[in-house]
Image: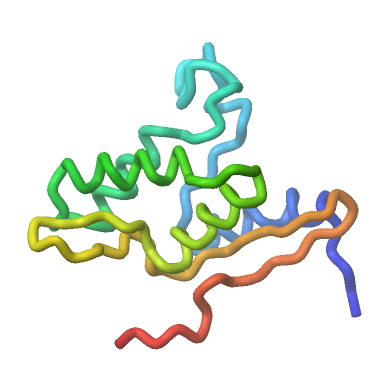
Length: 136
């Protein structure tokens, strides 16, 4: 069995994702104080505009209030510990973000195939969060 290291993933993943149609931007190209900056400083770990744009694109029927609520829930996951917040965030990626729409239903904001990269620092694994899910 071949093991991938974190450096293998870092070099291969962008090419795989670009092949699949994703836009790939390297950190230095979108860093603060550059012409195409996507954050004010390196302390901003979430690219807020990209997240807002994705929420709107994936959920065109939701009102702005529901999208804002989903953005807040994603950027401020509940939990007393880092582990609890990570679990909350993961659950929202897999099951959808609770966001009441105009009829009071819970609208799933993320139901798609996600490619997580899990790394322990020395080895990394690629997987999928929603593979095998029925579309019905």
